[in-house]
Amino acid sequence: MRVAVGLLRDAAGRVLISRRASHVHLSGLWEFPGGKCAPGESARGALERELREELGVEVTAATRILTIPHDYPERRVELAVFRVDAWSGQPRPREAQPLHWAEPAELAGLPFPEANRAIVNAARLPAFYLISPDPDSAAAVEPEAHRVARRLARGDIRLLQIRAPALGQPAFLDYARRLIDAAARHRVEVLLNAPDAWRAALPPAGCHLPERQLRALATRPHSEGWVAASVHDLDGLERAMALPVDFVVAGPVERTQTHPGARPIGLPGLASLCERASCPVFALGGLGCGDLRRMRAVGAQGIAGIRGLLD
Image 1: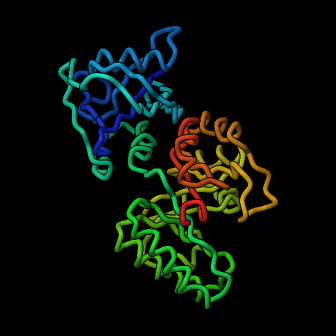
Image 2: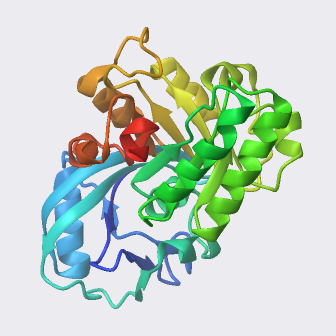
Image 3: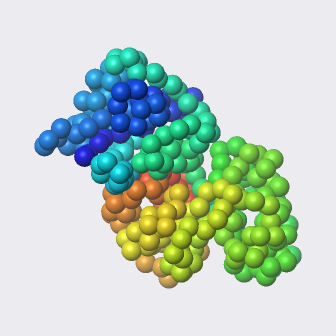
């Protein structure tokens, strides 16, 4: 069964959800607006029809961001998920379904169908994923940590990956603790990209897997927060989705100073990965805040980066 789903946000950033009726499959759970595709109907056509019938709105701009296959005991579904960027009309419950504009942080505590987990993640995740710069020595830890803290204070970064491959364990732990403290002051979620033993010495946080570590894992690692992974091709994406992770970082999209020898996948390569992704995808490599609209137009969640976001 094919289903089209819409992710709608209001001007305040709240997400529209509705509660399933008591007489239908998965009754009483919350879900995102949408419905079944008719035979021969495109997913985009079904989205427009369902939102018109359910909410009385006309979709004017939407981008497909996820394709989620899921097996329930009684049926198999494939969700085509669209970020609905613009519509006309005021959403109202035309089928008497309870509607609720939810804060993104609220979604994690609400009951949703299992197939909706990745949509909840997409609704909760921000548009920018800052990656910490790599100090070249212990002496550079303090100024680099101060640089990141100044950037977090601007308030538009809500997700931070802490990595520093050039540092040994003592210097890394010092750097990570400084950044974790700064992130806590500015309500920024943290993921650690470091060996397990190093992460165990730090306060609970999410986990970011480099692709070499992703390929060595058979099960999802334990984490107190998000689990993410870096991928560079379809094989890496499929491994990440099978684990599963909550989101991936894909690239490099353009040439980058951090990995000058890496071959860029380009915008078409990113679009191809987004088309096949069942989890949110951040674009990485040679990108800055000004590239957000271009990346989102091909289905990306947002942009990840060091210099492009930090400076």
